[in-house]
Image (cartoon, rainbow, N blue to C red; front, side):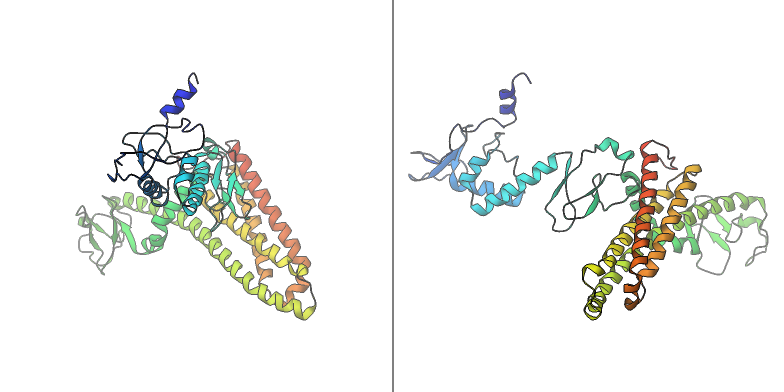
Length: 405
């Protein structure tokens, strides 16, 4: 930078004062905002020279901080002036409560402006997390971080940990689920597509003679062929092989196959999401029973912590399995996908075994402590194997996908 002082001045970031800023009473001064001109009117101006009464300055700053959430980029209230109000000037003019709000916003602005810093999305958490990952790297890695509050989240998109699926695929999957999942089952069971314009049509009567409301195409609901070729076959169709309907049936079959494929992955994704919630609820209930069992059997609180360890493992593994199905939906099949599915199957089996043991009656849990700890360790091991293998292939560009992203 050839002229740093001039550049800072143009950006409104030049030095406002050499010493401590202060208010002044200027004889004959008239405030340009409120037009007050009292003899004892306190005024204030930064080095730019735009002077206003202290009350107007305070109202202006309060509106910027409290109303607009501004801190680091509050400009002088003078018309067309881009001089930034510095922290010394602000400390002189605002109340202590507003000053606290200002410094909170200033800190938040600092974090928001840094590419390597992000706020933890956990409720009521005030920590920021540092991660050196660049935006361009998000196609090759899933940057999962852990905050000091113990919350795991993706640094790239701030969603909860979604390993092994990259952020862009997660975004596409969530949008597809939002658009498709609620109606997909009903559509699959109750509708067909018009052979001409492919509009979705519901059969609302017993007659097989269908007329598309959009393009007016007439066809047979059973075989998808032209209705004009059906002669007097009004209610029943036994002409499955006629040429006019074969292409429509092929297109219909492909459409249904695509929908069934999506439902295969979505149902398993949703199942693990629901199971994770149920496992968490079960632990909360079991924790109370374990507290009772502890007092009755003489076990220490530390000795019953294996249940907490198992619960956390189930939560993490369910979260991972959930996103493996979203990831698998977009994978193009090759030898690597078979290895991926084997790892997925091993983890799923381990999780179900641990979950089944976790649901045993409370009196039995104390005797199953060693088995539960062993199965917990095995679940964690299978999860690490699945994620490390998937991440390595993603980093090296080994995966092929069936969509552009």
